[in-house]
Image 1 (tube, rainbow, N blue to C red):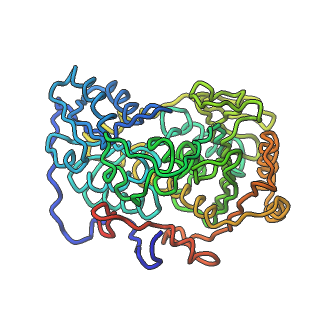
Image 2 (cartoon, rainbow, N blue to C red):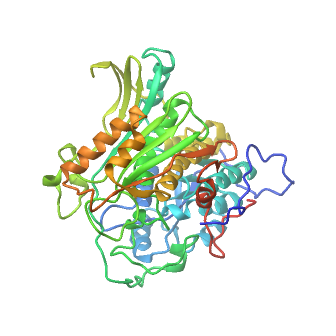
Image 3 (cartoon, one colour):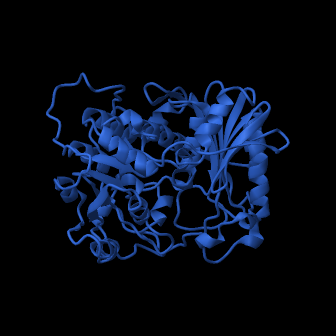
Length: 493
């Protein structure tokens, strides 16, 4: 956490700032390949790395060539380097992203590091004259996201911050349908992230650092703490020092869809979150079951996270991606609820409009470009406005994650009936709370032994991106973080 007076927020274009020489960038000819570097190849015993996924996706797009890969864990880096060198013998390998960013033969970078590195890697890349495709969530804190927006503007870089609904899902077309008034007034946006996650286990003390990794580089802007979980990789998601919980891991996609569907391009007026880490005692810190209320005018966002399966009978000893199906309770969606029906964008299920009885009114086919091709086209046009999901959009959506988690972290454990009394005047939240309790009851969670954490309703100044009113002094301490030299996200980018 940072001191209250540490951060001052700047907004809008930086075109009028003091003149500085912009880093030179290669002028691309019509037949020139765009030379890509990947920062954070990644791998996990639990799930394949995002870097690998992005490499496979970009290899399908004509007009690119991978020039360099970077990962501070050689055990992750070198196997992927060897695969790509079979087709590109000149591919370079780096363990320090600063050396990759110094490489003049790299035009753009794909940032697929853990969350705590997203901002600084992007800012350094912009300063080095490179365009950026940065994975979700765009930032680890609200301050970082704003600095990323400023860096992209100041250095005139193309920075794409992708989210699932912005892919070719039909959601953009469905939202246009809603804007035309076919379903009446929008009541609220409803996001669901029902995705079971197993316990990450509990260790007795600090774990050994793998010999293959530069742990100082891995920690980077985060606090350099002993490893106190079984797996260093992937399970960093559930540690506040490096991750943002499942709200920032999977939920960010559908939070972005909610905000986009409402047509909101600022932060909300108020935020409240409640939940807990239920069902097991492990080394994770972040909630696995959560309700979030984001108070936009005229229609709010309700978001629900479920980290346990449909019921106790469905729990498994080992989590596998193949287990993530409906019988365990998986449901991931963005729903825009209106007076006369709703639209829903479901993971893997397309987008459609429904009446209030659940009957399909219309299905929507995508007309938008895929995000990878769109990024490369924008690099060639040098028009940031061509991006489907520019960094400002990424910042706004990631900030919703941060706002909700700040309310949660400032919360106190309460008896169930006190929580019910606190939410009963908000019909939308009260109904969600009933579902929340039913879910925990199906998993046989004893809320007397594991009470609910109830966060305060916080007030936000959307323009200043700071909290005001009750609890604001404590809440503003989470706007940014303390950084370790030399891994500092600067006040002035």
